[in-house]
Every structure is written in structure tokens, then in C-alpha cells.
Image 1: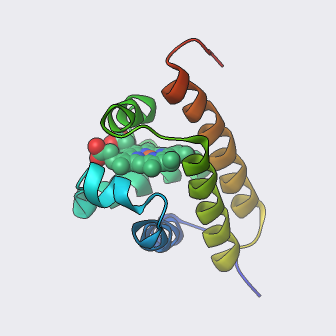
Image 2: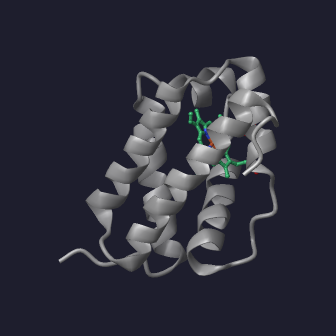
Length: 129
Ligand code: HEM
């Protein structure tokens, strides 16, 4: 039986598996490899902090994801299809690895953040949620 997401190690395994898919993805991989040449050694721990904060209330993340994506969007505009792809990969990765309350929570939070993010990034600040 699959376990739920229990700790930072589980978050790290999830995030690593997710970005392995993202990098190879035909629709969104290029944002990470070409548009921004992401430094994975730095980016991955930032993502562990981000999700650990969301799932377990840990205080490690102190960035501004909306602004980070506005900068990416200015270099190469995002489309709704890009966000849909991102979310599909994220959800699929969670479902392959974990099941339980935290697994449901992280998928739900990814969904709602992606929704807000695409409104704010693609429409400026005309939407405030
Ligand atoms: C179209 C979908 C998305 C693409 C292509 C994308 C791409 C990227 C890229 C290229 C970066 C690195 C920026 C840099 O290092 O300068 C980044 C950072 C990040 N992304 Fe995304 N992203 C997407 C959606 C999301 C969503 C939906 C979330 C959250 C649920 C998210 C969370 C983050 C976070 C937390 C960072 C780190 C920001 C920081 O440095 O503080 N991304 N993303």
C-alpha cells in the first residue's frame, strides 16, 4: 500500500520526481532548460522548502512565486495550456508515489496556487484573489 507524505524526505522525493518529468516535457520543459537555465542545486531545495511550508507549516520558504513567474512570463509568455500541463504532471507524480490526506492536500494546494498564479501572471494585477 502507498504511504502518505510524511516528512521533508518524502517532499524531496516527490519534487525530484516531478522535475524529472518537467525537464523532459515537450510543452513546459524549455522554460527550465532554455528560457531560464535553472540551477537545480539551488532550485530543488527552494522547492522542498516551499512545499514543506504548505504541507507541514514549516517556515523555510521566503520567496515570492508570483514575481518569480512574472519574470519568466516576460521572457517567454505562459499560456493556460502550460499551466494545465504543469498541474497534470504534478498531480500524476503525487498519485504515483503517495496516497492519503497530505497527498490530497498538496494536489489541492497546487491546483489553487496554479489558478491564482495564472490569473496574476497572465493578467497582471487586475485580478486580486
Ligand atoms: C506553466 C507552469 C509553470 C512553469 C513553466 C514554471 C516555471 C518556473 C521556473 C522557470 C522557475 C525558476 C525561476 C528562476 O529561477 O528564476 C520557477 C520557480 C518556481 N516555481 Fe514555477 N512554474 C510553473 C508553475 C508553478 C506553480 C503552479 C507553482 C506552485 C504551485 C510554482 C512554484 C514555483 C516556485 C515556488 C518557484 C521558486 C520561486 C523562488 O525562487 O522563490 N510554479 N517556476
